[in-house]
Length: 221
Image (cartoon, rainbow, N blue to C red; front, side, top):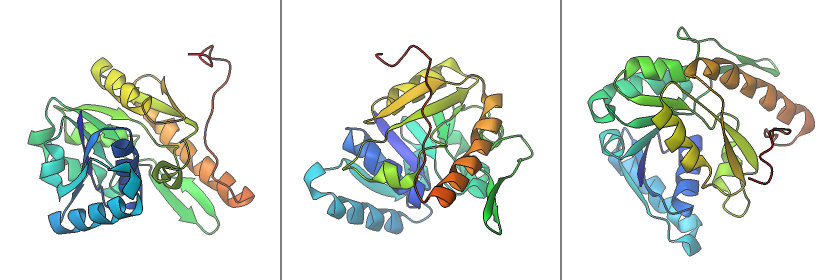
């Protein structure tokens, strides 16, 4: 499977690109500049020379041409970036991973986008795509550190069964990750907002908190 990442040169996008490539996905890092995408791609390969990462760089339309596409831009650019490649995204699974957050003094506060969530805004921007929300609670540092497992649960929200299934299959390939079907895309709103709580815990306890759910009967699954 080939996975493209819109905004793949940012912290979250590049971390995800490295992790996806490390488990065998042919990954294309997208950017507004193909040259910048190639530069970041070469740097990441140099940082992990033992992994022979199937990683390449391209302008965003090149990333959007992949079988599955992740929107990893900053939250306020997610919908508009997806809209620029709407034709390429039609009929494809598109994963939104952004959280609308603001830092006020020493606190992180969730923002409520007009559609209720960034994932819903992306779906509205590319109505012919099969949008899911995922990866909201996974620290970028943990995603990009191939020496450690991801070690968290990944909540997946979508109105499209195909998007839920495909996204969960991808997430379950990541070492230490466990994908959970969290329901319709409307649930992306509280899922995204809860990221502010995790960031606040990280600041208070000087750590990188992640989410694990118990009592689901899936511990051995």
